[in-house]
Structures are given as C-alpha cells and as structure tokens.
Image (cartoon, rainbow, N blue to C red; front, side):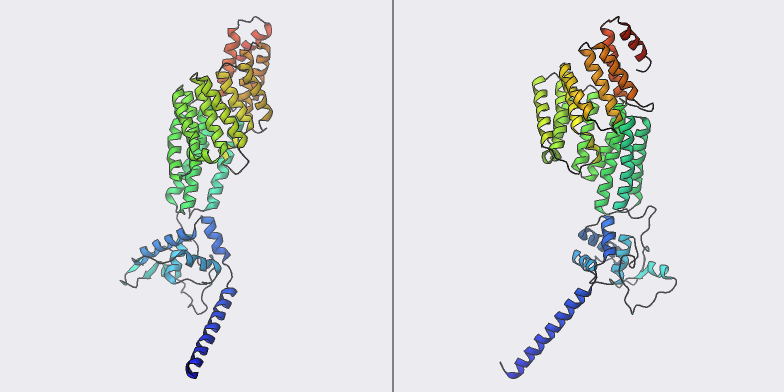
Length: 446
C-alpha cells in the first residue's frame, strides 16, 4: 500500500469512529418516551398493529401505502425519533387520539410556529402526488373516543357488581335487566368507537360474559326460554372475541337450559363439547366442570355407571387444578360447588344419604357472600332429609332455607326445591302436629 492510500484509509477509519461515537452518544442521550408507551398500552396496541393502522391512515391521506414499521415504533419509544414527519405524525395522532406533544414528542426548535387557525390548517394537507386537498380529522374524537384498556376495566367493574348482586339475591329480573343493559352499552360503544384489535376482542369477550350472566339469572328464575335468547347473543359475542373461555361459558349454560327443558340427551351432548374443548384440555378446572355436567346428564338418563365414572373424573380433575387468574364467572366453581353438584348426581341416582353428606360439606364451604347458593343448597338438604324420612328435621331445614332468601330474591330454583320438599312430606301422610303445621305454613311461601 502506498503512503497516500494508507493515509486515506486512516482518515476513513477515523471518520467512521467519530461518526459511530457521535451516533452512539445521541442514542444514549435519547430518553424513553413513556407517554407514548403508556398510550399504546392503554389502547391495547401491539407495535405491529399500530404500524399497520398508521399506514392505513397514510394511504387514506395520500393514496399511497405507508411504510411505517414496528422498528419505527421502537425508535419512537426509545426517544431516538423526537418529531416524526408531518404526514406520519398527523396519522399517528389520529390513530392514538392525542396530540404529538401529549404523546411525548418534542417539536423541532426550528419549527415555525403555526398560525392561530392551526386546527383548520391541520385538517387540510396537500398530497405530493396530485396536489389535491384532502380533509382529515384533527385528533380523532368520536362520540365515545378511542376505546382503551381503561374503558374495558370500567365496563368490567359494572359486570362484577352485577355478579355480586346475583350471588346475593339470585335470578331476579332486575339482575337480568342490568346485565342486558350493560351488554347493550358495550355493543353500542363498539359500534360508534374505534379501538385496537386487542381491546375490541376484550370487549366482545366481556359482552359475552355479561349477557351470559343475564342468561344465568333467567335460568335461576326457571325461565329457560329467556335464557336461550340471551345465549344466542352470547354465542355471537364469544365467537367475535375468539376466546375459548367465553365460548365454554356459553356451552356450560346451554347444558343447564337443556336440563330445564328436560332434554337430558342434549345436556349430555353439550357437556361432551365442554369436556373436549381446548380450554378443558389446558385447565383441569374447566375439565372438572365439564365432567360434572356430564355426570348430571347421564344420571338423569339413568346411565348410572357412566355417571359415576364421570363424577370420579370430575373429582380427579378438580384435585389437579391450581389457583390462577381466571374469569370472574367461573369463580363460583370451587370446592363447595363440586360437593353441591355431586350431591345432585347422588340424589338423581336415589342415594339420598350420600347426597346429604355432600350437601353438609357444601354448606360448610360456601363463602359468606353467596347468599343465594346457601339458600339453594339448604333447600336441597331439606329435600334429601325428607326423602330419607327425617321429616321434622326436613321441616326445620326447609324453614331455614326460606329464611335465607332475601325478599328481592328471584331464585325460583330454590322455591321449586322447597316445593318438592313439601310434596315429599305431604306424601308421607304424617299426622304429626309439627309436620301438619309446617305444611300449612310453607304453603304461604312456596
């Protein structure tokens, strides 16, 4: 190598080192854009989806596809890009429904201050290709704004309040109507507002859960036709959410309505779907609920050995389940509910002594806040005692169940169980004064 070429090479290497050092220094000085990160998280966007939506807005604006990538999003989040190009920035503002400054971007120092009529200026941008003026909205502000995770949380709080009321009073029309109204609000909000795919899926899943709670209120009120109408809507929402847990809940309630329609073969078929669902394969708790619904249907079809096998499968699956984050609706399925549903299977198979044993375990384990369940299973205990001939004890237990029901309760399941208890006691023909008195008294509240 000649001396001249050697010196040229040294100069090139020196320049490269200086440039690299300066670039790394600038990157190191860049501060993370936390405002942008918070807004993206609130709206539920992934980096790739945000880039796709910005590009779609750019194409609407310029008639040419945008070329923003998730790598650009990461540069914005790192703070390496302080102020995106005009067309990108305007489209980003529209997608995230916030100004660039509110998103943590810093205007360039040499940027000329906009005139006071800036909102009008921002609504009109000349395209480089045609020179035609295209109207675009300033930061996107529909009637309900762009939906984010916080909006989902607010709707979810209303949903939890409805569940708590249902656990206390049972299937009243008030609970059912509240759930229908909340599902309608979610649906109408989705219709008039924009959101990310993730947030939209979350809201569809929540709508499925909410309208399913309306269906359960109708089931508890012994109105399976109303329940089926709600479940038709729930099935649509669950499908739109693409959530296996929401779909599982619909199938769970469909098997319940099948039983109320006395279509036990259909109930068994529905429980088979539950058992074989993807969520049941992943989570033993869902598998347990599917098996125990299956056992209930099989018992009513008088297929005793199959019912008992399904019941054992349910107990084994429940024993394998662990505490983890799950949807609100399935929190009812705890140890007390396993014992209670097992009691139903044993009662259907005419083993009322075993049913009574399970019911005592149920009542010992039911959480305090679940007043409706306490009343319901106390009524079932009364029925099991009556069927074993313990009439005075059955009367006492039945009165306790009735006293547990709040005046606003709409739990017809509990009332129907007490009615069955009364019929069983009347059928004995007992002339005991205490029994006769209870029969007369119970006729006023059954």
